[in-house]
Image (cartoon, rainbow, N blue to C red; front, side, top):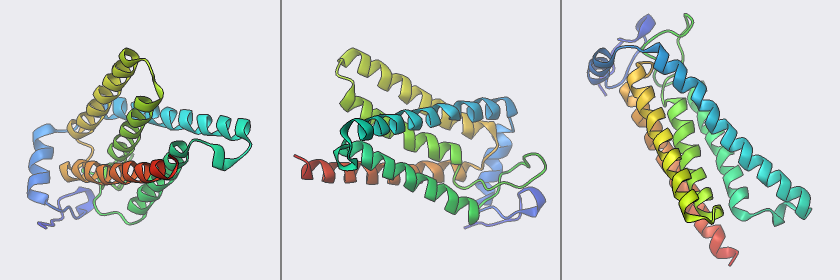
Amino acid sequence: MDVQKVGPKESAVGVATFNVFFHNLTGVHMIIYNITDWLGVVAFLIVLGFAILGAVQLIQRKSLFKVDYDILVLGGFYILVVVAYVIFEVFAINYRPILIDGHLEASYPSSTTLLVMCVIPTAIMQFYKRIKNKDIRNIVICILSVFMAFMVIGRLVAGVHWFTDIIGGALLSSSLVMLYYSLNKIVEKDNL
């Protein structure tokens, strides 16, 4: 819809009129881009933490089937997120509105948005179940929620993605998280 060659190196952009309008409105802020890029490490550390938890359970319990079901589902979910990322890197739909180090980079969906909006909500679900102290749990959930909002808004105003790339990342992430939630509920019923 409204595809025009308005991107760098005449790359085609969908919903071009609105995307260009929004990009011109926000401009490019490489400091915000770099901050959100580096803060993406937090999501990887969360993934690593759950991977370590699963590995510890596997070693202690000596069977993959004795690892907590929600950790196994979470591991499968992370693999699905990586597959989605790779698919959109290989089959680029939009390219960034700016060149990164002189190169066109795939921009749809925003990989940072995809990562953060997949990892943080599933971490919140995990922490809600695993942190027994209600006050600590609420503080952790609040911090994670603010972090996620900061990251998505930061990517939006950094100007390194088209508006629709951020929305696409949010929609894809929401769908994947709902799939995770649903599978978790199905497996939970089977384990009761």
